[in-house]
Amino acid sequence: MKKTEHLIKDLNNEVMEGWKNTNSLKSLQSLLVTSSLSLYEESPPFNFSQTTVYSSAEKRSNEEGVRRVLARLKKELEPWQTSPISIISQQETEALEAIITSHLVEIDHGRYLFDEPFLEFFLNKGYLDSARDFFMMAQKKDSNLTLEEVFQAIRNVWIMNSLQLIWNLPVEITPSVYAYSMLYPYTDNFLDDPEVSHSDKNQFNQKLSDLIQGIPQTSKNFHQKRVFKLISDVENQYPRSHFPMVYEGLGLIQDAQILSLRQNQSGSLAKEELIKLSFYKGGASVLGDACLVKGFLTPQEITFAFHYGTFLQLVDDLQDIKEDRREGHQTVFTLTAPNQTLDKDLVALFSYINTVSSPHPWDSSTTQYMKKIIGSCSLLMIMTTLGKEPQLISPSLFQKIEAISKVHLDFYPWIEKEFQSLTSDIDLDLSIKDYGKKLT
Image (cartoon, rainbow, N blue to C red):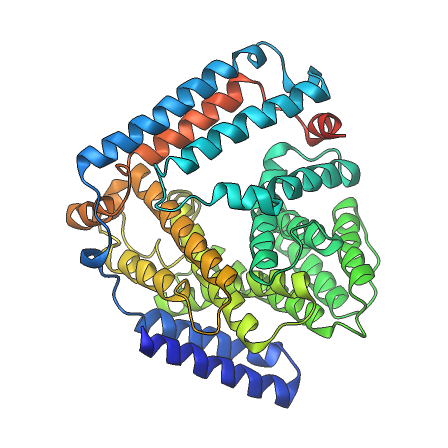
């Protein structure tokens, strides 16, 4: 770990020098990508033998604990199963929220899934309030959004909230947190739409790139109007003359978004090119988050945010492998034939996450704690995917990964289905407009 610690320290120094010489995030783009790839390739192999192993009996005990809590939760939710949430009172909505939260905290305190409880820490820091504020703001600004679209955006809100915690900032929905979290669901959905022509996509990308650079644009349709309004909201919080890094961060993610369209093209890309695209897109995305959270970043903050984004992108690519293969979207994981295993790539990802989330002497106690949580949650997302798709890896690697999990890997998708069942039982299929009314 000392070796990778020195690599990160050297990178911080290079970023500092690069920033001093150019005052430009764009000039650091190549350095950030290549150094992240070096860290990925040189991360010490994940040592399964030195990680806590849980017996099958311990796993079954933890699974039974989760089942007990969810069974009680299901029982307590029965009064809501006959009425859509859109017609229950505000008081009932608050009671529903309290019931669900208390049971999740009970699972957390039981340490059935994680060695160290952290959900209550997040709740005390304002994560639930942040989510509620985001829903209210979304209802006010775009009442036609579906809950699915808002949940797509709120994943980014939680990343920005985690950065706020790491840097000792209030956990809140600032205008820029809202704008950025909605910006790329809007643009992603537009660019992924097969009904939209390549010409229209290219024209939109050019207009958005120009707007981010400060060149005024006229919106020609509703989609452009709402996207351009989000950039305006950022400008109101961060004037360009005082916060140039914010717009450079936005420029990087827009550039990465445009380059990543190549992953949808028919011609196959080499693995080296694909991983560079994934690292650039993921790193630039969380770097953009960070710029909009703080306005200005230190070299250490730049490198951490970029590394954080790179492994989140790889986790996301792994989660989407089935859909990506079906739709012809190329990632480092889809290059492997369906009848072959992803062992080498999965071990590399485990190792990289472990390296990036490891504490360093310069980290605050809160940063060290958040890194631990981020690392644990990322590994859980991988385990959930493997629980659904065990054929992605060899039986021997599956056994090693399952050994360090607190439950059997196929239990994670079971939990996911149980929560989906609970939400369908209380009829949560409604628009954000309906849900917003319950929160106001």
